View 1 (cartoon, helix red, strand yellow):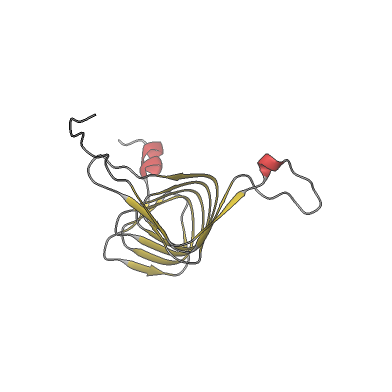
View 2: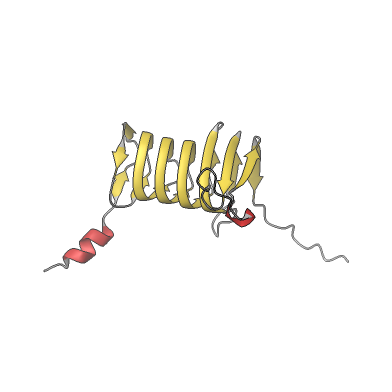
Length: 156
């Protein structure tokens, strides 16, 4: 007999490679996208695999993306190592850009987008400490790559 707690903990919503979904997608378990999603997404976490794409308005606790993102993304934690399309807005309390992979070279490509990292905005009329304001980064089309260091040639 299986433990019901372990089955609910292991559940996830999967959009498989070759699948395209348009509309509102809401889940109480993590969402993994290997295909393409266009629309509103709400979940505890969102993982976009290499070759996957999410375009739309997303509100999740955590985003891990190796695929393509476009639209408006709100999350507490964001980990990027894929493509961010033009006119994309990412709001996060924590942002991590991964540029290394043990198996191959990885890259992050930013189109024209806006990244806001830090705490939430205070209500109108309430002064906040400077550390509570999000840091906004406006990014112009940029390609960031991780390239291995050159081999030593034996000369000093």
